Amino acid sequence: MNKGKLSGITIFMYGLSILLLLFTIYRLYGAMTYISSLVTEQSFVISENMRDVISYYYEQCASPFLFSVIIYVLGEMNEKLKHLLLKKEQLNPESELNNEQSSLK
Image 1 (cartoon, helix red, strand yellow):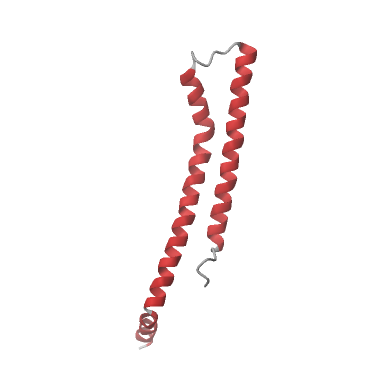
Image 2 (image 1 turned 135 degrees about the horizontal axis):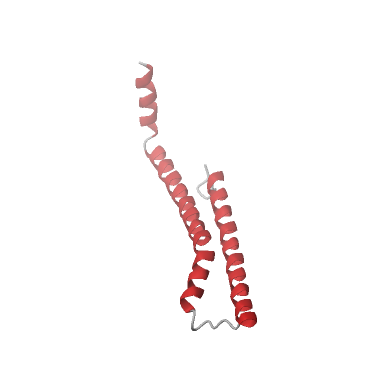
């Protein structure tokens, strides 16, 4: 295989990571508009309720962002393992033949 070519599962993980990141941005925008509507309509004071505001942002955005990062890291790990296995296979091509021959005996 070509060293620069990504596997299908890795491309899927990267794509899913990007989608989750876009979803995080959408949730962040929704949280911002909700907080700003509270400020304008109900005279909500952010400085007095800073803990609630931070908690709301965290609840809305943390989980999709963390899943995005985790899936991206899993995609990176998949590629690193693939390259390690290819290097091992290139260094010891005869060991695989010996294993097949010993299993036939």
